[in-house]
Length: 302
Image 1 (cartoon, rainbow, N blue to C red):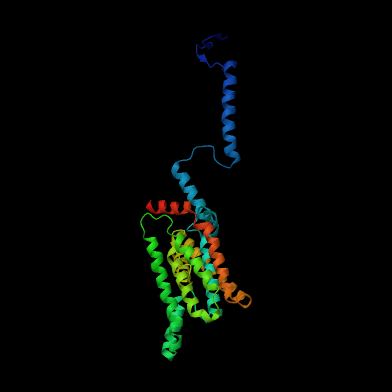
Image 2: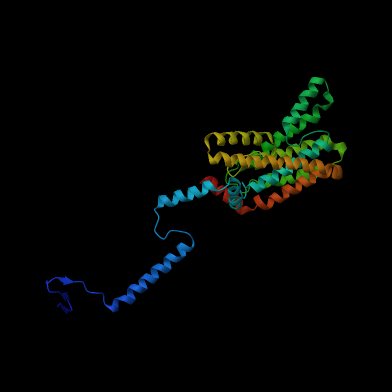
């Protein structure tokens, strides 16, 4: 028979036999097990493994989830954090300019407000055909457009001027509103004013999500959308897909503005340009608050 003592149990062959753990230690081990299970339960409920992942694995998992999201979903979700360079701001600006171009072409003597390439084209055709009476009609809008760019660049290049966008943008709204009330007989004055206003917008807003975008013309955005789409189909770079989608959204917004403006012209006449001014006024609530200007300056310095 074996002999048991506090040191253990000894059998007949003088070998030490294992002793069962005492009952006094069982509550402690049970509490530790309960605590561990309670800490693991939320992680399992959330579908997250309870073991600690390496930093590289977490980064790769986040990158994989980012790659799986649709590009349009990424644009919409991240756009909440942007203000001055937000997609929604670019959409409003493009719709407004599209309406303005449709208005000036239909009701102001077939002159474009922002598409100066079209005005220069008509100018060249009139000169070739000997229609010198239309020279001033198509010459002054591009000239005033250039002056608008100079004015906007003047405010942009001022050092430590956090609200440089506000003055050119407010001037643009005032110019479009004022020219809208000029009668049709004053088209020779109204059209250059519209050209000046769109020239200001060229410099004031020329980036969307850090991507150079022109909100006053459709040719460049359409070209860039096709270019980045081709690159994406070739090298499968998600950044190209993102830029192609941004440019396509701007093109569609501009196109929608042209259609909407042309449909409003029979009812509002040359006052349709006031609708364009209304879209620009909506943009002031997104881009012009001072805190967003300070945020942009801080980001550019970084």
